[in-house]
Image (cartoon, rainbow, N blue to C red; front, side):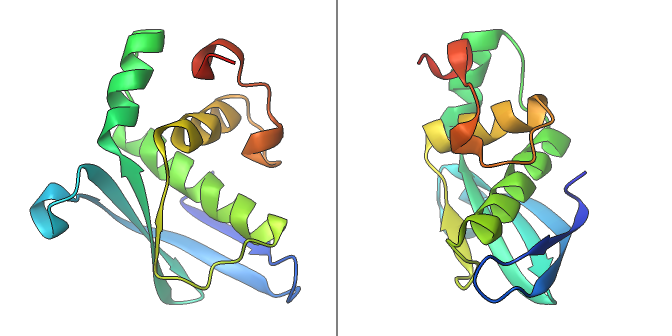
Length: 127
């Protein structure tokens, strides 16, 4: 769903085309404990860094693994939420926390296209 999508920016009302391009283990490129997911937003590179500890926490809470395709969905959901909420997509790199990552994962799992913060994260996030 979030490999190639469109979203309307809250403030500019621009219809932004977002296309997934790459997933890279960040330790290899920038010595970070994260997985970097690259999208092209209107042709401009935008990276979403998902922290590796989110993989561990998710496995601990659910017994399941975050797959590469699920990581792309989490990052894409974050981009969509950021544009729709007015947070914007003006930077080249966005780093999510473990809890933010899990909230966006929960929203994706529930098929929720609204803000991840508004979803019922229940047992997944321990709230």
